[in-house]
Amino acid sequence: MRRFLWVLLSLTVAAVAAMAMLAPPTRARLVVDADARVVRGAMHVHTLNSDGTGTPGQVAQAAARAGLDFVVLADHGDGTRTPTPPRYVDGVLLVDGVEISTTGGHYLALGLGQSPYRLAGEPRDVIEDVARLGGFGIAAHPDSPKGELSWREWQAPFEGLEWLNADSAWRDETRDILARAIVTYWWRRPEVIASLLDRPVTTLARWDALNRRRAVIGIAGHDAHARMGSRGDWEPGDGGYQLHMPSYSSTFRAFSSSVALSEPPTRRDAGRDAVALLGAIRAGRVTTVIDAVAGPARVGFSATHSGGITPMGGEVGPGVDAVLTATIAPAGSGAEIQLLKDGLVVEKSSADSISVAHAAQSGPAVYRVEVAWPGAPGSPAVPWIVGNPIRVGFQPPRASRPLLPTAQWARPVPMEHWRVEQHPASVTRLVPTVLTPNNTAHTLSWQLGGGVPAGQYAAIAVPLPTDFFRGADRVSFTGRSAAPMRVSVQVRLSATGARWQRSVALSTSPSDVSVALRELTPVDAEPGTPLDLGGVDAILVVVDTVNTAPGSAGEVWISELRAEGMDDQVRTVRSK
Image (tube, rainbow, N blue to C red):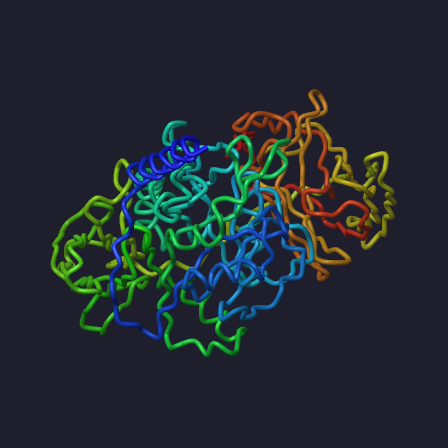
């Protein structure tokens, strides 16, 4: 028995020693003076409201243990759930967001109230809806190795992106590295999570390039679920066991977002503090710190010029000389501050501050700050600290111009032979009302079949004469609906049954709608398949489960349906 116990003890000591040798180094513990205006928190966190494993209260408790001030939740959804108002739990501000699935990737919507209809479909439509409903959004895990999670619509006007995402970071690691991480996780949890981080070269390059065109904020997303399945995924339902690892608390200790507010939070009025927090995030006053490498730490970044001082996330107008300055606290950390211009390092120093001058005549440029920690994990090494950019010398954004100029001619569709098409489980009725001899309004009363989404739809189908779209560049109509909603405007080639579509929003007030034919995308053909307008013989206005819940009912009014254009040339339009 003694021999057995001795062997067991020896094996235990050996296992502990092996884990200690394999585990990443303990984080460097720094000391920094507090700034009451700077709050630390976690972005993009999932709970039991979608595919996480903890309640919002348990998430807040974990955040409190990690020393955080706020958590931005981002459970999967379509925006129709009433968001829980901001609230303080265990001293942590919880703010509801939603992660929306689009056909081009996932979109984090922040500051969004309840949507009157499902937010889904193409990225351009979801981004438009989120903005119209008062929110703003961030492209999630933009370069995830898991293809269906990556962001694929880089021309869309999203306001921010995740320069770092914990769910993306581990997916490109080898099995040996992941096995080592699982074994040593129990020894140094936050440090092991940080050991899987690399410098996301592609994402940072995209971010720098985007900021040459327009302001785009960058954040770090925890994408925390506190679960891992038997296949190594964080998603549930893989048919095997689920481990509650990495835990919320360990993930929150790995890295954090520091947000600079205009004034200290009240820590009592959650609604007011949430507005200030989201406003500062949207303005780009956010810095990421990999706390499991070293911390706490804080970076300041600003531009000084004749007009005053512009903080991180801001813009300095054209024709102005400026000095960009970055500072780091605490002093003497041994880290290297790097100032980047248009994605390239132009100045670096191990001192506690660094500056670079921008001459107005040198043209516009984007500056941001990174801090490198010696021995940081990753290949290439993950930056220890990353701040948001300051754009210098760019012209103010022009007022948005209409997609299409005023049409020079219109060709109304024939008023006869309009009909309904529907899924067998749906119920429809089409009622025409003659407004003038040349204009008939059609009312579609619809109710989609209930249950789970299974192709339920209701549609107005309008037959067209041959070559109806000759010379046209758009299809236009006047429309409204009983409640705010989205409908799909489609054209169809009966020879093949192929369709191209563009989603549009309708409200309870009549509005003129124009859909550019070049903006139509294939419904059931490969992306980029050319649309031969000469073969189009039907226009459809479709209500389906992309943006409408099964079992719901309503009415849509359509009048003055017509083709419009600028000339009489027959064209072949290619989808974007």
